Length: 88
Image (cartoon, rainbow, N blue to C red):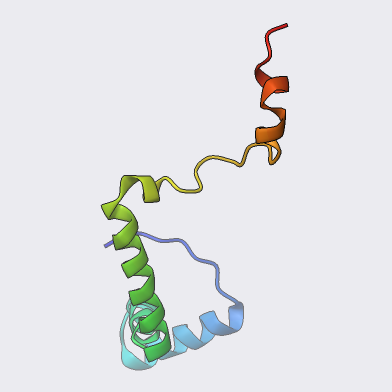
């Protein structure tokens, strides 16, 4: 398990605390249960699958994984290449 620090609105925290007390479980378990229930919703599950699929594709090709790492250069480089690399 991974340790995580989160900030919750007070009303949500109180609801989770009350639920945990009523079920006689620790607050952490109530949070895990809520997270699991949320991640199993059809729309959320579909989005998670799509993200995993994109990650899997980018891991196959190292060049795709590096896409976006470099900032863009000058947009008129083909017209100003002589100005940039001209020896003084």
